[in-house]
Image: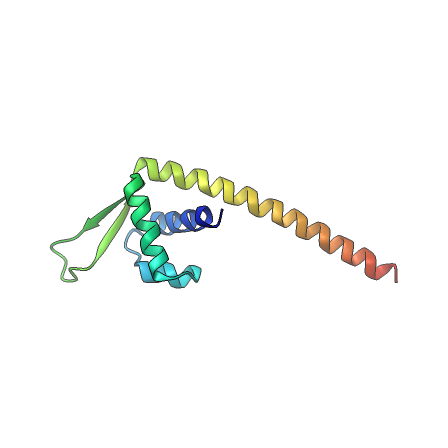
Length: 107
């Protein structure tokens, strides 16, 4: 599940900013640069992301990560699953807070 969440976050970042660096993604989500590189390579291999190098750019190491239609679909699917997971977590936390308040009031 953790890899799924990381893939969803990476796909969302790439959709928002195709020019984002792997280092920026790693720092934003507090995961290793190697893990981001591995995940992006896997997304490229699955056909969800295309890597585009700008030859005319002065910075030859600059890439753009373009989401394919399949990548957009996968991003949407993963985002919906992530949202459901967070909503369930929110409900559990909300119930725990209510239980703790009740416990304090009864003392």
